[in-house]
Image (tube, rainbow, N blue to C red; front, side):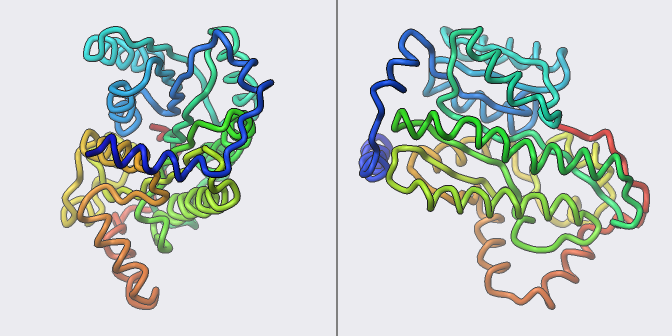
Length: 299
């Protein structure tokens, strides 16, 4: 059943695709890869395991070599025969895009699917944020997503296939007092993804964005949000479950993916209820009571 639905989605996706012979010739002898930023842990690693069931090569990009090594070994052990490569890189740096594209060519790989997963979180009053913290968040959550997507998309369109899957948040749909810049950055990811999806409709490239609610990863602790009320009132989903539903939705050609009951209900509520009602509730849920804002919290 899943395969039939995916075939239908693919035919609709390809209705206006025009693969260019020169673009197809350029990748002859190269291996298509799923490139996952922030792929060494959390949702990124779970997505790598899920994609590994369907593809021949995975590339994990992250900042910590030890975590990359552990993630690579885990994927290789669980999915024998798959090619797993790692790239130690801070994608928030301006030169990151050139570094990735050059490295892929050296490895005889090309980006067939880009997963924009790496992200920075900030918790606390906006007035307590630091310039360095703001710069890091904007560089990672906004600039890197835009730059990488812009770099990979033309080749995908020329080949008439490929995809871009970005991880946002349920918080993208509402202002987030006490996580103001993080919520705003995820709103950017959703808006960019939906706009691009409309621009290239029918040309063979999937564009999807995931809107998870709380997920049980190190992310909350690293942004100093463990004391926030949402950590006690909202049940966190497992990364594996989020990844399974995300990849399924992506393969079926969905544009906006709500992985689970909480995100699905959350999207409905946030689209119906006015901000005058919902924003005070979100403020209450996100408030940790501490003005401290960590800056070293990249997942």
